[in-house]
Image (cartoon, rainbow, N blue to C red; front, side, top):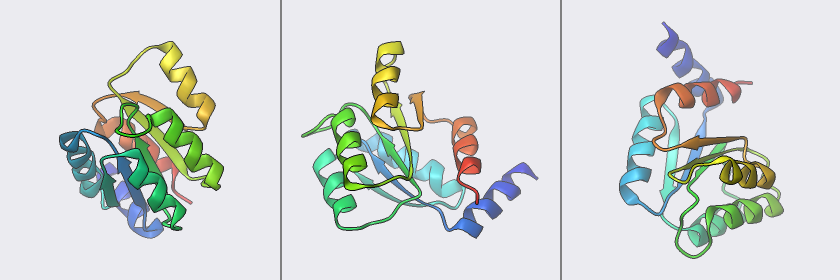
Length: 132
């Protein structure tokens, strides 16, 4: 019942997500998890491609970013995306943990900081926040 409600939320809002992670295995797994709830996804493996995509007016309801990325780190790419004017929900999913890491990302404008792996419980909570 709960899974069906979540799928209805996703389909009603036609949710889309960008996954930015330098580890291809991680972004494929995160995309598969998102797909299992009906979210349309796009994955990139470096910060330059993410910023270029956002700058080209691509629109997403959710952006998931890893801290460790080729070219720019996740903190810097998050700042650049916010400077472009993007106000969608952003989620930091990283292997880097600790209070100082969390505070640094929250200061850039991410809505949540989660240690890897991204699990269904956290994702369900985030997707429900996007309803409406």
